[in-house]
Length: 211
Image (cartoon, rainbow, N blue to C red; front, side, top):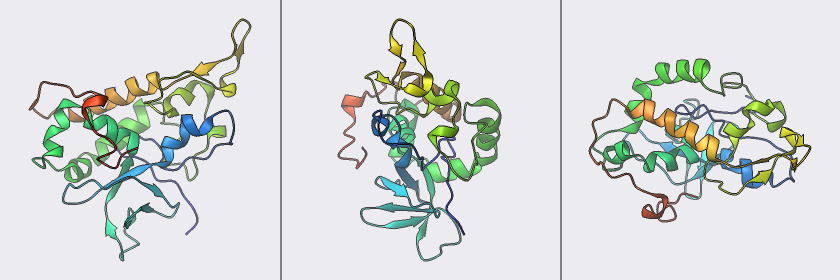
């Protein structure tokens, strides 16, 4: 089996992504190489990366996201950025408290999620491609690949230049709005259990082993 990309079933984001070094691309796009694994009991692992063969490697363990590798614990890989946004969503509290199981939810909604991603998101042209790389993304879709937690505007030469301001700049705001709307759609059937929306400051990402 050759190298391939796997995709977050909630968002459609690739879980490994190639780009040229320079232009602060690590700051903008390296989040696409970070993933967490949702295990059958609903536990979500620490951050890891896809090895291009269907396995997610964390500091402590290797997980299989491909049923071919039976020697590893099996799970569903999701984008680390999506996981961080899920933690900020008030309806996700039941998953954190293990009252609901995210693994079961993703499996039960898999067809709906795939259909929605393929038909209604900026990733529809790229979802499922064997390799995901920046050079293949159309300029209009690039904002949806930027780290949603990037607040500073950084130059992106692939977006072109303006006569007055020169090279166009980009941050993660557009992507954060888009991903949050996706998460709203996927969690909209869950009754509210906490009407207080947590902020980035209220969640200790470092303690949860999340970058």
